[in-house]
Image (cartoon, rainbow, N blue to C red; front, top):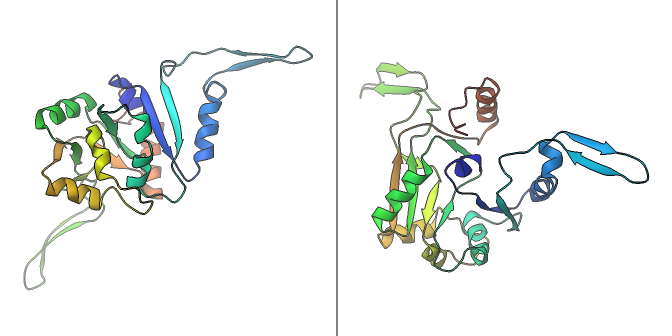
Amino acid sequence: MKTYAYYGHKEFILCLGYKGEMIKDYFRNYLWNTCDITMMLGRNPAVKFHDTHDEEDWSVTLADTGEDSMTAFRVKQIERYIPKGEPFLLTYGDGLSTIDINASIAAHKTSGKICTISAVHPAGRFGALRIEDDGKIHAFSEKPQFEEAFVNGGYMVCEHRMFDYLPADPNMMLERKPMDDLVRDGQLHAYRHEGFWQPMDTYQESQHLNKLWAENKAPWKVW
């Protein structure tokens, strides 16, 4: 959310599911969570928040989209919050990147497609081997920083017509039939991002990303 706000996009809709109440509590008590506080106790209690923060002009809609819902159904349920005909930005909650959001929007507008996804290089998780037919290993590379292949890194730009591809089915994943149908209709575009991108899918990735943050080496921190 900080990344999007850095590029000027400050209206958010969060598709809540598992642990959604924790996220509601966090934003409900945002000043309590982000400011130093003085409390006046007694019969006339008062609270004074000492700090300001960069999020004072944000709008955050907290939408309960179901604990067990798959990704397509979550997005389908927030259609009512997107004005008819208005494009919107869409991403996952576990990816960090140095992507230029506004450049991806510009690429999307040029493409004329319904949906543009950001194509990224995943971080290498395994050592790379070069093996001949006889089984002899001729080269071993320990976990390359990035793999050559592209994957869907989120950070999507969508036209409102995207909702027409999303069925009201709690078991439907965005990455299955909706994406296949967009490809079939020639309506899926890719914005290539060659820089940093990293998901937080595993405990090891969580440790790695938190370590970068703690050491002030987080490349995604552009604000």
